[in-house]
Length: 452
Image (cartoon, rainbow, N blue to C red):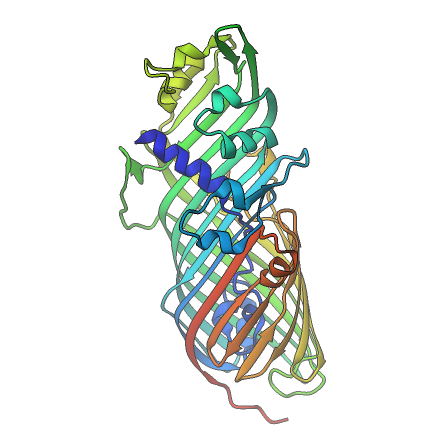
């Protein structure tokens, strides 16, 4: 059973393409008519919404992408017998491989604007998984030769690699205020404070990985030298099963400011909008379970027969590790850094109802020199959009290191939104390195237009 779980995780990490974005619901999160999308992006934008109130019913955004595998046939995944080795094309360019997953599910929530003040309450389940700096040969071997990876895996070195998944629930309350409200200039600021309930955490942090194989006439031997890694699994997973217990396990904040330049004193009638926001800044307390341990290689040549049973099958994962090194249990608690991002952006009205947004998402942490953490990438985004109370159309164009350039389209009809951040580029390329899909349903009421 344990080997099947490890195999499933390995195939999941390599066969599913992912690209993670903090900017979920790309397009609607900018709308004057969908403020509950903005509250997790920049709570300082709440007082600038044209909506007096809004209630979220259910919203979901799931993003998947990578820089290792490309799906060459979209039809292939719907066939009765899907063969990943036939429909996936491997990108072998000599570079380390990086992968991510991001899902953002928002449950019941509401916001209200009155005067210069705004309040919001929200619930959300967030999950981020990432793989950083995995050696290309190891990634190829894991995908194509999992069952005989020891026999197939070529010699390789990996100075540092990490993988992590972090899933948790959020319960948040936001407050924002318009501090400056002039005929031409407005300035607002807000904060979204969140308490967190952990669901699951796991990470792999590998250092100085070195693998060499020796071919003999009748046998094969390997040496992992002094390779070392920490496998940390929260106590939510014990004895092959998941368990969940509600509790308050951490905190986080979203905070930001937004400036508007207006050609007239009418509410919402801005020419230029500039904003800065910090998202998901905080920590989540984790307690490590019985699956957590440190491994260090014994720097010895070990024959393959030492970790193969009488039937010729490779022993369990733990038995193989015990043959080539030493495992030491890890216990205790630790505060885990959340996948934070910093956003800087500008939004310009070109003609009435037509805008162009340009923004940068920055990962404020250097994860390469830290322990394995679930992280989000730095990202550049441009979003032309048409936005009215009844309908909105969004055409996001983005770049990050996983998918390079992507483009998509989204539509909002009233308070219902549906779209994708990369569907257009995927169809044009006919090679799918990522999938992003969001949908949202809410209800709300518009503010009365203020007179000059």
